[in-house]
Amino acid sequence: MGTIVFFYFAGVIVATAALVVALRSPVYSALALLVMFFHVAGLFVTLHAEFLAIIQILVYAGAILVLYLFVVMLLNLKREERFQHQLTVGLFLGCMLFAEAVLLVAKGKTSLGMNLPAPGEFTQLTQGNTESIGELLYSTYLFPFEIASLILLVAMVGAVILTKKGILEAKS
Amino acid sequence: MDTGIRLALTLSQIGVVMGIVLLTVALLTLLERKVLGWMQDRMGPMEVGPYGVLQPVADGLKLFFKEDIIPAGANKFMFSMAPVLSLVPALIGFAVIPFGPDWTIEVGGVAFKPFVITDINIGILYILAFASIGAYGVILGGWSSNSKYSLLGGLRSAAQLISYELNVGLSLVGVLLLSGSLSLVTITNAQEGGFWNWYFFAFPFPQAVAFVVFIISSVAETNRTPFDLPEAESELVAGFFTEYSGMRFAFFFLAEYANMILVSCVATVLFFGGWHAPFAFLQGPESLHWLTGMIWFTIKVYGFLFLFFWLRATLPRLRYDQLMRFGWKVLLPIALGNIVLTSIFAYIFSGN
Image 1 (tube, rainbow over the protein chains, first blue to last red):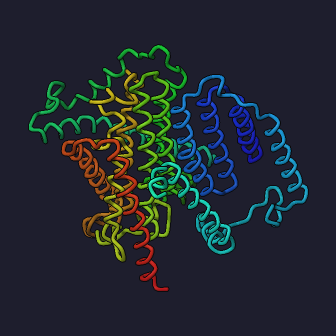
Image 2 (spheres, helix red, strand yellow):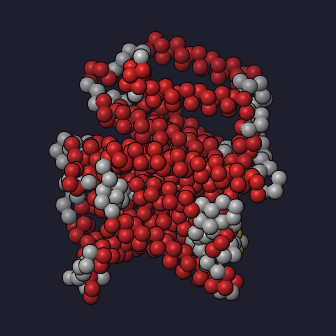
Image 3 (tube, rainbow over the protein chains, first blue to last red):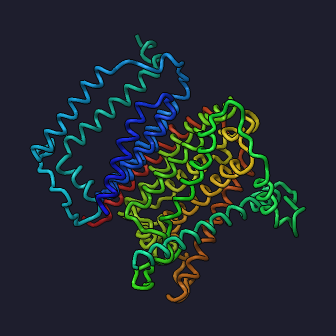
């Protein structure tokens, strides 16, 4: 049963991910991406990671993709501008990522050096999902977490400066 | 066998909840017009049935038999998808709302909670996530209609939903800090005993300010006056659903009202004790908790729905830039400040 569910989710994820790049209309691509986000969330649920599943929908589907659609509608790109030839770059990056994935699975370790769990085995949490993630973030991974928030802050300040060009020019 | 019983139970539960929600929507359409009528010193609908009580039936029949028009040049697939994408997220949120006591009964060897469809440990995030999915229906409906009014309405709505979603989420964090849980059932149970335990009044830091932020933001998220810019009739005809008619229009309409009910339910559960009575003795004996609980829940929800109508009758519409400035420069700092203060008080009084 679990295997069937996994292959359903995995199959749909691969198919819709391919559609995102293959479809001609950016709005249809966005919708394919939406379907993919929901199936990734489903995959998280089968792994007993409900918190991640709902954050996947809340952040990616509910906020980022909506913003993306917003931009697509405002830009209203002409036909010829829609397509850019990035096949070489894409192929290079794709091969790199694929090689990395194969390497990690072959070594049986994650990028942080932890052992990958054997298939079908999952860690039994003593407390809820959300609490476990919170504890890990604020103890073991406190430093990466703080760096991530600093980067986000810089990005926010950058966005404000980019949109408010007048502020800097008035000073100089 | 167990799976079959569980499936039957859950499906019938979903059916009952959906039925009640849709009936409430029908009732609300009449109630809104009546309340607005009384506030503006007129009668409201009076033609169909005694005092116009059959008006929702007439409206429903009219919408059902209206010609379904798809405008020329519209994207047909998106045009018919959008109303569904708008209605489904509005209805799906009711799955985690506890309408009555947290009882577990056994039916044919299957444990079953009669008053909540499912008690997941991330209930409130679930509601927030699907509320944000509702924006797709609005944006795609506006975009696919091939009409300038619709497109402008859809764009406005997208910006508004994204901005105010944030405030809704942040205003709830205080309650989550005090209760230490994301499950709506646990949050309701923590507010037992009397109105001074409701998070609106609760020790150590009453969430009254957060509640005001929440209510204002949710009025904006449900596109109601004074934040109904996406459908401002004086500028945009009817906003993103200008081109819709018949059942597709009805779907958008149902979604708006279902969202109002959902928001009222969330406000009731998080800030006003859910199904708990303001005084313990008003709850009645233990065996009657299901009845008094549902009655109190209904009273509170209808109180909030009345507030929605009241606001609509009282306030003029905001201008677009006022709306954005208010959301980002007033509500957001208040919500963040509330989180900081709540965490400080919760830390001081938690005893460690």
